[in-house]
Amino acid sequence: MNIGFGLVIMFAIDYLILGTDQALTLAQTAATVLSIISGFWISLLIQIAFGIFIIFLLVVLTMSLTPDTNEKIYLPESDMEKAVRTERERKMKSPAGVNLG
Image 1 (cartoon, rainbow, N blue to C red):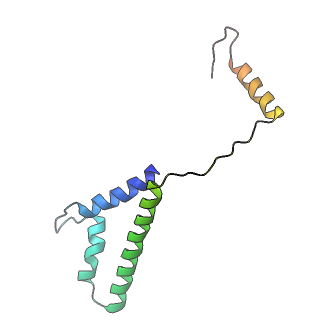
Image 2 (image 1 turned 45 degrees about the vertical axis):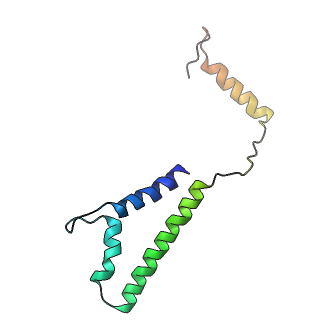
């Protein structure tokens, strides 16, 4: 959840930070490409790509703000797994009772 939210906030800040003519941010460069390039099909392609990216960011934002409410199922430990775990824990302890691991 935090990674998706951070990604969206990072691109929003990247778009809103004021750049100069010499150093535009990545999102500002993508937004100003339309004024530089002429041609119907390439302009349409750029607008569609920019729109899909914004829709993707909105989906990631809504997914990151919606908590996961799925019920988790934890399978019980089998007898063999329990024996292996307890043996490993027993080996990790020294004779003085200090845990080495």
